[in-house]
Length: 446
Image 1 (cartoon, rainbow, N blue to C red):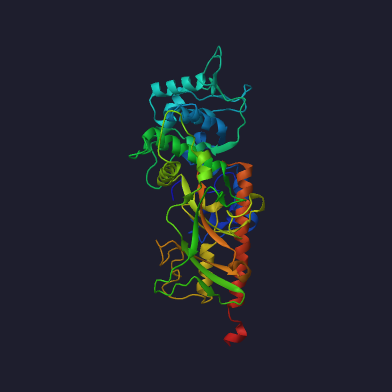
Image 2: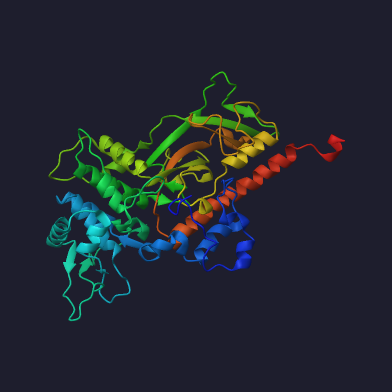
């Protein structure tokens, strides 16, 4: 795994005795993805202050997170400014130093915009000038002994900061564009956004960045297991019997439990019209295609650049139906595809597979191969199976959700990750009881 796709909390600033007690932390969790008790993984990483969110080469540029006002970012587009101005605004927000006496003073300027987006120096200068003219930036008087780190701009000092993103998203372009399995950063998003017959490169850049920021705004690991499914979600439904013995519902080996097999109802995630109407700001100077078309293209850009990944969350009941004040809770995260931080994002799927195979609940070609554990004979079909006590069967919903990468290493994020991990731990214990109850006793064997 490269440094962009895996975290290694046991590396720096951690007591060796503590590290030795957690042998799985220094290796890929292949991911039988077994959680450690009581949120140990997340708490250990928090005690290390997230320093290992960065590779050795990124220690300066990648630590911490930055904040911005999402409404003001949207306003940049609504007043008729373009992609250059929106991307430059995000860069300058990333340079705000809270330790400086000036409110929202940023040490980033033209060079930082060039380094982090790939736009030309003249384009960056023009973008900052336009942002200043429209009141998004305020020029600061240069100090008598100005230096490279002297703040040059104040970024929306009166606007509330309501969104946080990892500083790693703003890594300078001098390290090159993301390749292979690496996730994109701001510069990749600017340089690689593609047009269509209906959507210009300019519009694609704006839509992709705006959607990415709004997905972050609706992401809550504790409450939703990722981005709120009311924004974007893919429902699962009964698996079709293809002649291989795959049935939607099967009685489990233990009374009171049921094995459910489902598959995705549609390939692409469904974007909510309500969400898109706020996530994709309208510009007075462009007349683009329908929001659904823009949203689907922006989502594809984010997916292709590995800025989003999938979380398959099992809910008590449908979280989208009913009043927002009475929404159900997630039962457990069943599977995560393309996780940014495997050690911090456990899931249950392989434990389910093991329990199903060990107890003889399902045998044959339709089951996951026991010898490999992580590979499925159904691979590519979108099918997943899970075990439930019978009381949940008629109401539980499996939904594929989105997780937005480069989430901030903030206390809120850590609290949510701990809640998500504890749910996996709880269901891991339940499955262990299920397996134990299904296994024959010594007396039965003799």
